[in-house]
Every structure is written in structure tokens, then in C-alpha cells.
Length: 483
Image 1 (cartoon, rainbow, N blue to C red):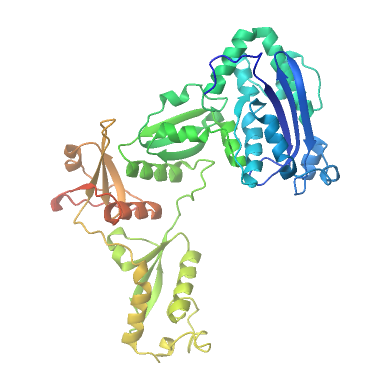
Image 2 (cartoon, helix red, strand yellow):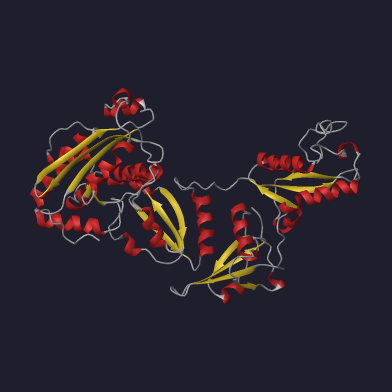
């Protein structure tokens, strides 16, 4: 933990800037590092090098930075300078403008070598925001213009380092060492908070389960997440080490955090799913809700052989008649093809070939035992079909009507009763009285693949901690409709 006030006479600040082949620490590499060391009012050293990124520098980056592929062709690799760089940065305060970017790249380069790197990190964007809150823009060009700093070679490491250090010295002269020391001490003590958020945002967040939402400019929803500890999970987003350009972009765009508490983890999972699918946040990678789920039904043909038929309208009260849930027709047909190949079933009866006279195409290749031309015993073929599809059969709803799964949080005193019917989450109430008074008649509910998996696991999973489940009486069975 850093001291509350930084002593400029004994603390060395390493003003560092890097140039890279792009914005993703996961896929892009460093092409240049520049460092200027400052202590007690004076520059006490500097260190710089070009690096061979072992990948091509895109033309746009070449034009922006002036660093070309021929310039770095004979430069050292990061592995060649890693020991020296680590020694240079040992025991100093790592200072950068938008430090999450530079620090993340340096950590990623060490990670590729199987090594860990960490340092006290000071972001001069955050320092500027704290010292000059009346201004909106705090990028380097804005600081140069606002404070009358010397013109430098922008987008080269030592040029940006020179501008950053000049701003730092200007702020010291304008605000005085005691104030700047106190602000830096506070910034080093706090978790790394994106610069556009209030510094006390983590203090406001609950320590229990629920869903959190990140918003950007113009209240655009950026991200929805869930956790059993909202504050802890949100803090992990702000760790200061963004390994991907996605993380950097989300952090830079973030303006506001909202949250919804739940009593338990299942409630948080279901709410997260619902909000991702309905609100479509920009940075969530989880797939959106499938417009039309597809399943497979086995029906008896004219000759008595079981045939596969794709079902595009799922009826929740008939789930036991379906095999598998797929997000598209292509996914369902791919599954059918795999089942046919593994079990020597007839592609024609599985609907994988157009209907035509005579045997299926696979019969001549010895991959079908002849059901398509009635050469295989009907009972034998149907038994093989049932065995092949058994593992895909969907769970039949085992209760007469809706049930409530009770989640209670001792710390918050909150109780959520999650109401399910035919594996669909249809409501949440907060007391048994409300549960038994609940009317679901005519309510439209969408059958969702991800929710189905969660609910089956929660209610029927063998390795899940037993939950308290209450049932509505048979007379209270509602008519829950599909939209």
C-alpha cells in the first residue's frame, strides 16, 4: 500500500510511453519504449529502444508514428531487453498517460515470456482530472494546448514522455508539492478506476449477488454482467491490466454503473441472461436470443420406420417429445448428420436428403443398413433410432404446475422466489404469500435455450446444492402462453 503522501525527494517516477502495432495487448506488440526518470525536481536518467514486434506494422500505424517495418527489422526483441527493462522499472512509480494501455502492454509482453510484472501505476489522465476538474478533455493534445506546453513529436515514445513530464512539472508549480503529493498518494492507494467514473464508485456497490450494467456516453449500454459479489466483480474490471482492446475500449467509454441486487446466484444468472438478450449491450460476447429455436421430433412413417422432423415451434408442455435444442436449422442438420454417421442411420429418413425413389445415397456406400428400402427390420431400426437420440431428449416438466425456488440472502435479508413453469422463468416474487396469490393466466413467456439449461441444472442437477422448492396447488395451474 502506498503512503498517503508521496515524498518527491525519495520517490523515483518513471515517465513511460510505448508505441505499438495496434490497440490489442493480446494480438499486437510493442515497437518502441521510452522512459525518463524524475526525482526531487530533476531528470535523473532516461532509457529508450525500438523493438522488433515480430509482426508487420500496419500502414496506418507506420503513418501515425513514423516507425516503419525497416526501422524495427534489426531492433532487439522484447525478450532481449526484458531483464534490463525490469531492472529499470524496479522500485519506481510507473507513470503513463492513459496508463491502463501502456501498463497492460508491458504486462502482456512479460506474460508471453512466462514472467509476471507489476508496479505502482500513476495515470496522468487521472491526475489531470483531479487537479483540473473544470476541464472536460484531458488527452495529451488537450494538455499541450491548455497549459502551453512545448510542441513535441507526438506518437513517438520520447516525444510523448517529454510532454507528460512537462505537464507533471507544470502541475507541481501551479498547485504546489503538498497538494500534488496528496493527490498522487490517493491515486496510488485506490483501485484503478476509469477516469470518467466517480472515485468512490466501488464504495457504493453492494457486496452481494446481482447484476451490474456499464453505460457509456449518451447512456449507451456497454455491458451487462453478474456476480455473487457485485463490488468485487466490478473492481476486477478495473484491475488496470486490460489484455484486449475490447477491455481498453470499454474502460475508456465507461461513464456510469448501475446494478440490481438479487437474493442468490440463480436469480442473478437469469436476470443477466434476460437483460443481455433484451437490451443487447455492445460489449457482451454471449449470443443474443435465437429468433426461432429448432428441435427434432421422431414420427412414424407410412412403413412404420421412425423419421426425424425438424420442429420450429417449441411447445413447452411437450418437451419430452423433442430431441435437442438448436439455434438454427443448420445446427440441427449438423447434429442429425453426426448421429447418422455414428449409428449408420438412414439420411433419407432423417430428412438429410430430398425425398426420391429408391435407397438413400449412403446405402451404396455401406453407411445405411437399408431402412430406406425396407431391408432392415422395422423394430430393430426403430430401437437403434431411439438409442441414438436418447441423450438428446429434453426434460419433461415433472410437476403438475408452477414451482417456486426460494433464494434467501442472510446478509441482506432479501428473499427471492423464482417461479418456473415448463422450465421457463415466469416471475419473481418475494414472499410465499405473493407466490400463492400469483396469477399467471395469459402471461406471455419466451422459451429460451440458455434459461432452459440453467433451470434444468438448478432444479434437477445432481451436484447442485439442494434448494427449497414450493409448488402451487394443482388448481392453480395457469395457462402460460408462448408469444
